[in-house]
Image 1 (cartoon, helix red, strand yellow):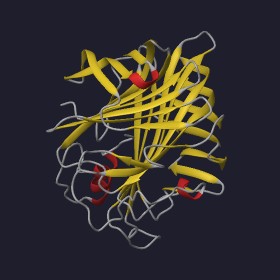
Image 2 (image 1 turned 120 degrees about the horizontal axis):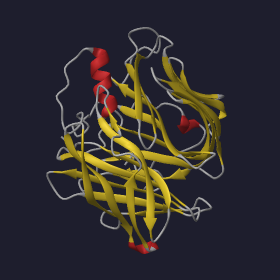
Image 3 (image 1 turned 30 degrees about the horizontal axis):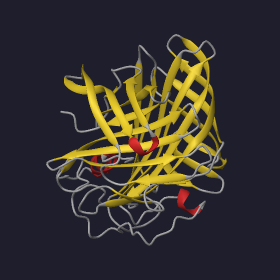
Amino acid sequence: MRRRTLILGAGATLAAGPLRAQGFAGLGETSETFAQPSPDTRLVFPGDHAPHPAFRIEWWYVTANLAAADGTPYGVQWTLFRSALAPDGPTDGWGNPQAWMGHAAVTSETRHLAAERLARGGIGQAGVTVDPFRAAIDDWALEGPSLTDVTMRAAGTDFSYDLRLAAQGPFVLQGDEGYSVKSASGQASHYYSQPFYRAEGTLRLPDGDVEVTGQAWLDREWSSQPLDEGQNGWDWFSLHLDGGEKLMGFRLRGTGPDFTAATWIAADGTPTPYPDGAFGAEPLETARVAGRDVPVVWRVTLPDHGLDVTVRALNPECWMPLAFPYWEGPFMVEGSHSGGGYLEMTGYE
């Protein structure tokens, strides 16, 4: 789903106000005062790269599967979340109702390093502009002449990275022309991706600098209630297959039956969306991570394309020990297809 109940919690923290949690951070709660996604809406670029402040939540989310010159694999995450504390308000000053949160991480086979930033809108600390494109929180930034050609940087106490991302294919609309359904009862978001970035740059790690190249995937999503009240966690997969195809798939878990959806993306960028039940994600092995059992090996299937693969975490210890913790990290793909990708999991207590 791409995904993120995290940001609503960040908004509540920054507002120092109470939040009645549902699921991971309340995104199954009805929100009648905010705008709601519509299947009649058609996304327009570059305009929809900008924030949508009438909606409650939004994110600019990048994951990258990288390798050093000797083949050593790495993963990188860069995320900017926006949460509206109210559906309108002043654009400048502390009365601005937008709260922002940034997450960054670097993963290797033996280390997972993560950092977090929190900010309030209206004071110049965080925000997004389109022409030229810039999404930033403090000195972390995703910026360039347009969202098809950007540099991406972030830093924690023990790592930093500086990467260039250049799109080699089109933006891809998820779901029905960008309208992505998340439950049997009809909760939804507006959702598109750029899964065709070619990435190159430098990771600065405790053992020294590493020059890397690879592939990156951007997800853009906004909504006001993307979960049903009975849903409390998800498993989200993005696959870069060696044949040039891509796959996005998710499983939403809760008190009722799991809800799944997927998009098969051809090498030329043509998307084929799949409804609930077509995509399969079955946990095969778990690891004890941060005091909880987390699936780190999966069987992922999409029979319409003959896909039946094992997804294995590069590093099982990819716990994000931040204000709103979750698991996110790179994986390797083997079976009917080969490649790599990224997995995010929430709701494992």
